[in-house]
Every structure is written in C-alpha cells, then in structure tokens.
Image 1 (cartoon, rainbow, N blue to C red):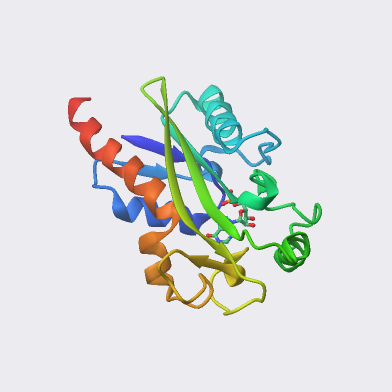
Image 2: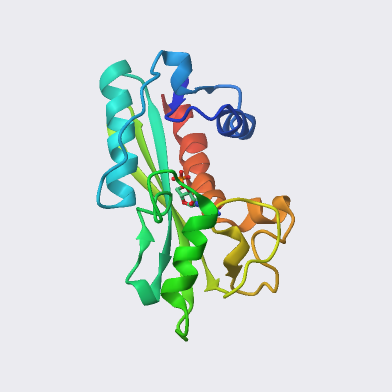
Length: 195
Ligand code: IMP
C-alpha cells in the first residue's frame, strides 16, 4: 500500500520506510508532484499537521500523514509552540530563536518545557492524530553541537546532557518525534492486515 509522508525531506521518508514492513511504500511530496510549500500558519500543531495531510489527500486521494513539532515552555504559556521555527523571525534562524528564548526566561525560576510532536494521518479517508512528548527544562547556556533547533538548551528529565550533547541514537530513542512515530507505526502495522 502506498503511503505519503507530507514532507520534502528525503531522509525523513527513508527513515520511516525502513521502519515499516514491505507492504508499505512510503512516498515524499516530490514523488507525487507536489512542489509548493504547504502553508503552516495554523494556531496549533494539530491544525498544521491536519492541514498538510488534508491538502495532500485532496490532491492525491491517497493515504497520507504529516507532522508538526513545537517547543512548549510553561513560563511562556506554551510559547513558542506552533511558532517554534519562526520564533525570532521569518528566516527560521535557530540561534536567534535560542537567544530570544533565553532572553525571555532570564531570571525566571520555572524553566519547565516540553517538545511535542503531532502526526496527522488520513487512512482510508478517516483522520487520526498521534502525539509524542518529552518533558524537560531550558538551561540558561547552550551546551553541545549535535542535533538542531533548541537542542543545545533542552535538558530532558532524568538527563544531565542536553539534546545537543547526547548521542543522536539516544535522542532518537526518547524524543517527542520518536514517541509519536512509534504510535503511528503501531497503528499502521495493526491496520494493514485488515485491508
Ligand atoms: P518541525 O515541525 O519538525 O519543522 O519543527 C518545527 C521547529 O521546532 C523546528 O524548526 C525547531 O525549531 C523545533 N524543533 C523541532 N524538533 C526539534 C528537536 O528535536 N530539537 C530541537 N528543536 C526542534
């Protein structure tokens, strides 16, 4: 069965394909001739993920899933959340985003935060949402060079190293994205037999 992952990132497509059994063929947006940027200006991660999945479903009629991720900081009432990529401006500069975040949290004692990934799946015309979160805190200086985005200032609960210091294999085991993806894979592996 063909399944579209609403992304242009070939690595993400390959990664999911390697985790699914052979009954699925995973396609990226370019494989189905969708080259435009699908807008991501919803108010929630759920809005954005669903919008992307619906857009592709309307264009192709095929089973599709889409994801969206944000960093939710308690002291900032959940910000940057759905605006995580563009927190400090349209050019999506991760370093500027961290600088802005640390500025807003300067002197604050509540540093609690979590990463949250939402995956929207349209499967046999029905919609499903899967969520994965990882809780932690924002430290006040950058540490580490691995990873991306807010990783240098995010310390997951129970860890003394930031997401930019722990090995990628470990991050990929415990991350928000890993948790949401496992739920999706679980759904897909239990549903394809009944098709
Ligand atoms: P996306 O929905 O995967 O594109 O993620 C949106 C934004 O959230 C990214 O541009 C990053 O700023 C942030 N983000 C998502 N996942 C991670 C992560 O694993 N570590 C650090 N930042 C992340």
